[in-house]
Length: 237
Image (cartoon, rainbow, N blue to C red):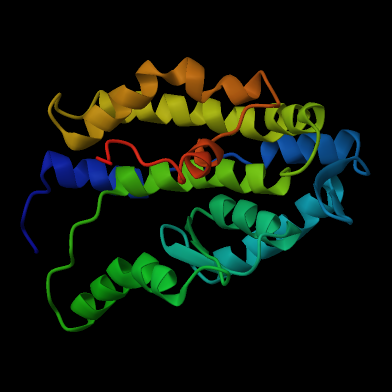
């Protein structure tokens, strides 16, 4: 509204949305320059060198910037292949938020993933107040999902290969994530839900980052949870 002085919270949100994109491409550019034919990602029989990864992601990032997507949510509909990995890097470096749209998931999952976005678009079009979303939370999800995308690209490879890729591609993202979380934590009140979530992750940071030291470690505990599905805990016989 004209004439209204922005609150401190509104100013923080604006600054968060105007942030610089995650620097996921620097290590790729470095290796593409020094060893362009080195394999960056491999899935089955398909391989992608660092030079090819840089070329694909740069081309798509330029197209996205031309479309003015900086600060917007960009969905990618496709399988978990090498094209998806290049697309994620391009989306992040275009300054956008990556929204995974996996065609292998049930239709309802995709619908709910986009529901809040669609609702805000409808409300804005009809002149209604948009539902407040947390730019900080969106940014954290964006950064963590970039790590999961790297993990998907190295699934099935040897621990040594996974560790090498993680130290090259994942470590810079993890270090940036920690810096970002500490910066945002300093701005939040102690009782804020996001502050509680940040403190929980930061207290267990050594465990969270163990995958950067051991190629056998997974980023999530999905495998352990699947192993427990057949065990009923607390059920009376």
